[in-house]
Length: 388
Ligand SMILES: Cc1cc2nc3c(=O)[nH]c(=O)nc-3n(C[C@H](O)[C@H](O)[C@H](O)COP(=O)(O)OP(=O)(O)OC[C@H]3O[C@@H](n4cnc5c(N)ncnc54)[C@H](O)[C@@H]3O)c2cc1C
Image (cartoon, rainbow, N blue to C red; front, side, top):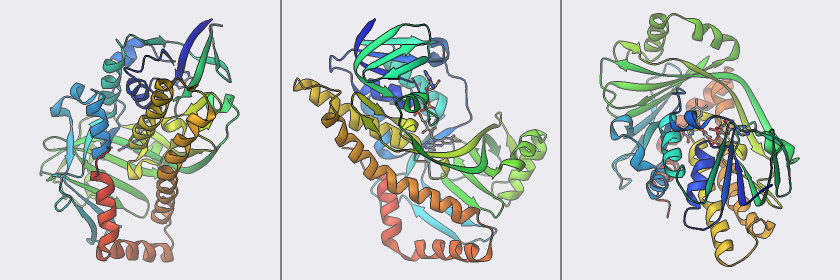
């Protein structure tokens, strides 16, 4: 039997971010991950480019993760535009006036994963158990498929939105299957993007074009599931021409420069984030629709909140698995995540509804957004505000 202070299931970016946040606490941590350690050390590209808020960038810097991200691999979002259908009218979010030079950065997900692993791999109190999966979980106890049992004051599940650990602990989750698929890829283009991120809500699909370094953009297309298969099977040149046309040729000729990766879209919100000797972080707690780019940002900040609570309890000699230590995390994270989750789902529904009233409502929403400065100011502030 292995005995640890904390067992974390899942070495994704949220799980490893949480583990790295515990550095210096003296708490012993076991991380159980299904993938091999060679994959964590050099994760394959998965097509996701993650838009990060200023708070996330700050946390990653504090955790030493940012130092592992090559500067040349990041995009910088200076301004953002939201466009409705084929209309030229746009809701515009500008970094000017925010006191920051940009709204956020974009970093490929595999580089975030690699950076998190680099920071965690040699922490003296952390034991990585890779190529291992969980067979059973109960209060303060994890049994691996190999039969090895681990005992801990606290078990943390960070094993994705379809968390088996959450389910094994008897915690249900609200799930919203959008019946749609998102296809992500990178494309080179003739004209400069000027650091502008554009989200186009067309009637049969949404298209986000996010600025990476140079004349390259990250492209995110959301389609009905039955159309996604055909889009994935299209020859590269035809796919590129289709995206170019849907973007109205604004970036000139576009060419695919990465593989296309498809993800089914299912939003998940756990019924509870904590139980005695148990907590959920990252997508296991809240799995967002990617259209508003909140998922990892939420996972990182939530993990930091939980780590602070656990460290403080440990420093005061309290039981770190006590529900009274964990509940403030649940409360704080829910308060931030719930409105974002519900708001994102409502936005997705409004912008995928092709009926006339919805079309009118979404155009009105864009115009209102532009003429109601407090709405825009609040969104820009949320992107650019500092963590501490
Ligand atoms: C297309 C797309 C675009 C996105 N864009 C953005 C964005 O712009 N901004 C943003 O903030 N977020 C974005 N997100 C969300 C972001 O990618 C996720 O929130 C983030 O990756 C979640 O990290 P995680 O560590 O919680 O889970 P995951 O990345 O899913 O990692 C879970 C880990 O647990 C392991 N695991 C699973 N089950 C077990 C088990 N039983 N035992 C052991 N190990 C297990 C897995 O192997 C994996 O390593 C996007 C998501 C998608 C799909």
